[in-house]
Amino acid sequence: MELIDLFKIQDYMEKEIQGSANIPEDALGEENTFDLRFLALQVKTGELANLTKCYKYNAKTPEISEEKLFFRALDAFQLLLSLGNVHQLNFINMDALTAVPKEENQIKTFSAIFDGITKLRDVLRAGDYYHALNLYIHLFAQYIYLAQQLNIDFEKIYQYFLSRFEVLEPLSEKN
Image 1 (cartoon, rainbow, N blue to C red):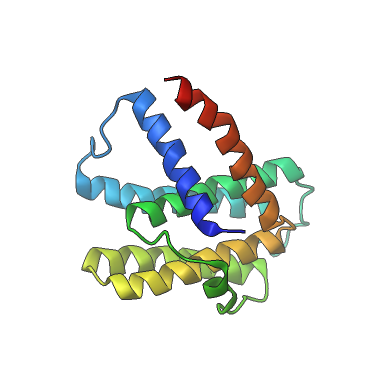
Image 2: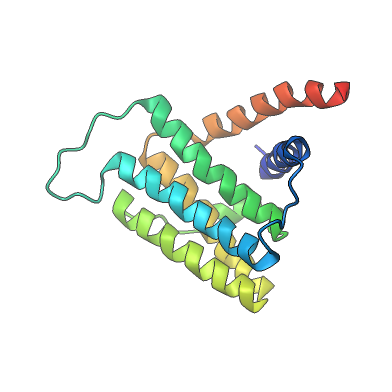
């Protein structure tokens, strides 16, 4: 499994969407677009946390459709890949991710993800690329660990991206 494939497919999908939407990337202004990407990742991650209800200590864990859970996780993951592409952090590999320690449960993993998103934004804004790369690797690993905690096999996410590319590639060849 090569992570670079996921970054390439995400980039391809975004270019297809931008091409059909005909809206410039920085229509809201470059600084707003920067913050918008991080906010979007936080929102999609929050939607996933809300779906799991793991933050409610007095509530019974709801029955969640596997499909709904998968696609909510996929939404957040696509935004994570997009950030990697935009900020040239898109060359990480699985070996780098395995060195990141796992959190013990979903609550701690979600907390680590939210902290990581904020730290990554701040470090990129400051122009500290080396620190940003380390934070991105940590954040990427946390998303994979969260998927595992939610019983989502990362291989399924990987295969979904490959299947999307197979569908999109012939369409672009016709244009």
